[in-house]
Length: 100
Image 1 (cartoon, rainbow, N blue to C red):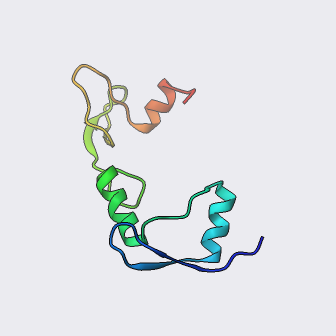
Image 2 (cartoon, rainbow, N blue to C red):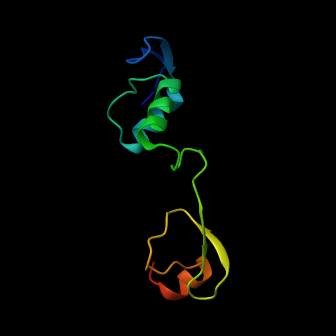
């Protein structure tokens, strides 16, 4: 199937943006059936609004300092530890939870 660039109007800001042939081909390989409704800037703003700062979109993740319950080493984890629950450095975690 041959694709051609399309111009689409953003549903949020109303500006026109290009949905390139390469992007269309990518959407098809991923099985996406709908075209994008938002321009790249509005898509990024929506992702940031929806997922906040701890996400996989290149924004820094908040880390919390802890002491490993197994070896006593200072480390950081990407979640706020709960009192009474052990927290491990990555090396000890892999020993305690080998199946994960």
